[in-house]
Each structure stands twice: as structure tokens, then as C-alpha cells.
Image (cartoon, rainbow, N blue to C red; front, top):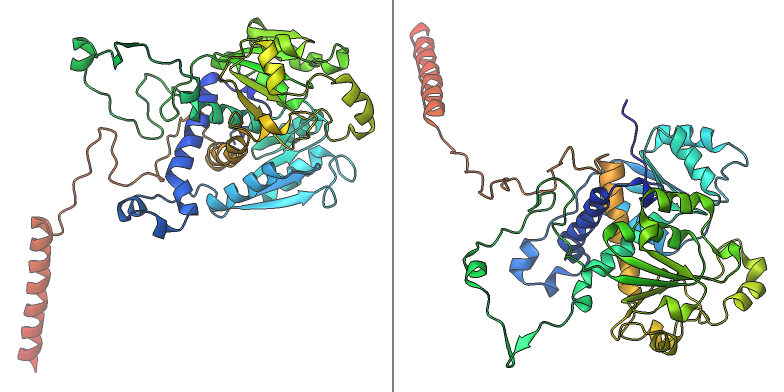
Length: 428
């Protein structure tokens, strides 16, 4: 039996694989989100063009092993599984305790024998590593002490969807846009590729999401699982990172994470210091996260003291020299001491679109990783496409209702019945 695909951190994926997940997320959102609104609010043409989501989880169950509380991740997972035709079975810390009454190894084998996927939100990262090592079905990391891959996919999707906000103004001459060159005008336009196809050679190139220019992304806050997956992903997607955390070494990335950063060559695109104002210099996007993660409640007083001056505000970014049109992101839940209301609820904030995209990126993971075991696009499943769609862009010719061969067969059959009837009459 083939080894199941797992997703424990984006560091384990190639750039084409990350792009495939993002493109599929955009495809799912564009083609299935309208089903969530009453069809009466849509035009007839739009309503008839809607597609049901792929039903790759039909008759399948995903076990959700959550030893930590969750809002966005749980909602996204349960609604995604339902949309894909399956079921998400929630098992909280009161239902199952990994490593307490049963080892993760034994739990993985038992759960994998009854369910078709495991979506686990655990404490120490070693727990999900052991689940993946012994599970006969795909294991996806919903959050661990080191990594949070599903959050970073949602962040990237949100940035791509808002790529127009980061585009430099188009240079104009005498108040009019420059006319296209003759070569550009003569060049035929490429057809928009369908999901799963590409205008570029090879798999994994961008086909659905808008291209995003290289950004400078500033992170001001604690070095936790969200930042860790950013460190191994954003630089590989062409972006630079500027990070500010308190000087205490405990606020730096652990060795297990930084080793992956260096291994992937991402360290060359990362600046790291302790001054928040220096971190936001030239930033297109400013991101922060909770200062007090789950399990660190006893450190609340000391942490708030250590993070003095780290609150994201208009003043901080203005004095630090962030780009005038900088945008803000936060994975939620948010506290006021992390970012003030002016930024959080203001026009710079992409927080709630970012939260919405948790659903589409998790649905993409469930569909490709758990439902199809096909994160590379090798199998190129097509059951969610219309039957008449073909690779060459033409439609499959309609089958003739009657053919010459069918006519001859029917005539022979009819003649045989008539002859038999005549024989029966003669015998009578």
C-alpha cells in the first residue's frame, strides 16, 4: 500500500505543491462559494453556472483530534468536510487524550482503521509526528507547538486576492495611459486555464490566483508556530521578511525551526532584530500574533512587560517608515495590547478576509491530501469538471441518438418477432 501523504509543516512541501494548494483553494472559493447565498439573489445565468464542490470525501470521515480549543480551524474543517460530501468527527481532549490513556502510535493505528484522515491540533509537535509515522491515512497538522501550516496558506491566499493593493501606480503621460506596443497588440491572448491546468510548462505554476509582486512583510511579536511556518514559506514565495521580537533568546525561533529555515535557504531573505520600528521599515504588510499562546497563561504578566512598545499602531508604522499603503494581518484571536482598534478595524486590515480564507485553504487540503492523495496533481482527477470540458477547449460532440447499426439491429429484432408470431398462428 502506498504511503499516505501528510502535511505537518509547509517546510515539507515544494513551492509547486504550495501553489497547487493555493490555486485549488481559489478554484473552490470561486466555483462553490455562491452556493452559500440564496440563488434568488443571483442572475439566472450565474445560478445555472454554479458547480457543486468536488465530492472526494463522499462516505468518508475525518477524525479531528483537538487537544486545544479552536474557533476558526474547527469551523473551517467541519464545514469543509461537509461541503466535500464527508463528515468531520470532533474528538476533544475530554474524548481522547493523546499519550495519556493510549500512545499516539496506537491511537493512529486505531483511528486510521476507521477514518480516512486525521486532522490534529496537538500540544508538543512530537505528538503529531508520531501520529503521522504510524497512521495508515493522511495526517494534517491543525496546529502544534512548532508549526501552523493551514494558517499560512490562508495568509498567502489573502495576499494574492488583494494583489491589486500592492501594485505600484501605472505611469501615465499627459493624463493618458501609454498605448500598447504593436507587438503586444498582435500577440494572441492566452485562454484562461481551467483548474488543474496551466499556461506554463510543468505543474504547480499559478493558474487561478492573481500574481503577487515580491513584498516586504514585517512581523512584530512573539516567535511562535505561526511565524515559524512563515519563515519557511514566505521567502520561497519571493518575499522578504523583517522580524522584531524581544531580545530574550526564548523569543527567538527554536533550533528545530531555524535549521529548516537554513536548509531551505530562507535565511537569506530574513532580517531579525529587537526594534519594532526598524522591523516595519519599508513594510508592505505588518503582521502580529498573540503574545501569550495557549499554555503560557502563567507568563502573562512577564510577557506583557517584555512586549512593551510592540503594539501595532499607525504611529509605530509611520515612525518606522512602513510604506504609506501598508496592510495589516492577524491570525486571531486578538487582544488590544497587540494591535489597537484604529488599525484592527480600519481600512488597512485584512484580518476578516484572512479568517474567511481558512475555510477554502483547509477545504483544498482535505480535497487534495485526504480525499484524493494527490497534492502533486499526478492523478489529475476530473470528476468535478463538466463532462463536456476537454483539454483542447472544445466540447465533446453529442452522441447520436440513433445510429445505422442500431437501426439494423432493431429491424432484425422486429422481423424475428413478426416471423415467430406468424408461425404461432399457423400452428393454431
